[in-house]
Image (cartoon, rainbow, N blue to C red; front, side, top):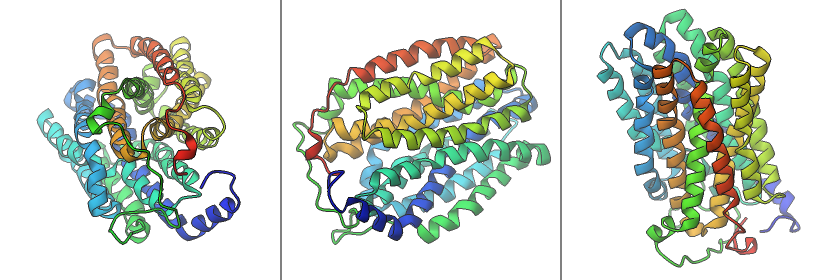
Amino acid sequence: MNAGEPGLPGQARAEWKAHWPVVLAAFGGVALSTMNTYSMGVFMQPIEHQFGWSRAAITSGQAMAGVATVVLAPFMGTVIDRLGPRRIGLAGAALHCTLTASLGLTGPSILSWQAVWVLLALMNVMILPNVWAAAVSSVFSAGRGLALAVTLCGSGIGSMITPVLAVRLIDRFGWHLAYPALGLSWALMIIPVLFLFFRSAPRSDGSARPHGAPQPVIVADRGGALATLLTARFARLALATLLIASVVVPLGVTLVPILSAGGITRSKAAEIAALMGLASISGRLTIGYLLDHVAARVLAALSVCIPIIACALLIAVPGSIAAATAAVIATGLALGAELDIVAYLASRHFSLGRFGLVFGTLTGLVTLGGGGFGPLALNSTFDHLHSYLPALWVAIPMCLTSSLLFLSLGAYPVPVSQEPR
């Protein structure tokens, strides 16, 4: 059903009344999945001080997760169709918390640290956003856009809770015990909610279908899956996504060390960094609304320039609480907009019959750049130059290039009226 048709608001309200617990559970799953991403910056300094490992070596585990996700994410959609998102999400959440707790047992050899990260890398695809979004999409049709936006806001809550919680656990127990305490805390908060409420709507053929939704119209592809990934349009979208993910996610997860390097205390830096979560939620909900009113490629081009503001402030006035606060807010707004825009562009520029493949691949690139090689490059810069400033300067042209690539996508090749809402 298209937006604006009679009865749409009533159907959306009915869906929310019946299925808000699914959104709540998926929201929690997204928040839990960010645990290691937003705690890394807080754990980095105490680990470095105890073992003398370089910051690049400490973040190398996240690079492994990025590589594994790029390889495995495109196939996760098939697994979801076979087993359903509930089984995958529950198992992934339990494994994620358990392996996170085991990070506290590592050292003094860097190999033990990297071994746990290999396991985390392999299971990371079980807690990617498409797992949680699959369940939400299966029970929402008229209200799907808002439901997905609220679900993805879980990452903002994760970025608010995790840094502050991690600092307090480290200060009280030391980093070795802080990791088990962090994993247990998230497990107690989220896994019971997932067990009680995280489910999808079954169809007679065993796959998921939106509650009360008509059979969607799928525009046929002119080629196979490989042909879709080899198009110039996908290449531009993929490169734009990789570039901005390699800037905004590493910037977000490394804010505490960056602010500390500028002269702000670690505890104060963690408090300021917690504001990123509120900004991320605001950005996500705002973008979710604007995508229905503004051309997505224009919105994307503008949004990916927001991190330039953050970089300029961190470069120009290091150590300033006011500048740091503004930089954190700008970073949060960009983080909130990023994945929503990429998902929307993927759904408009490519057939819905290939959405799982396209968005899964793009999600893998986000993990590769944002959770893997981006933080590795950022912290390698610090290891060699004892400053984050050169990396912040490089981030500016990366944002501008991403903006131009998004603009180059042009108009949607498939009329909106041919796609399901």
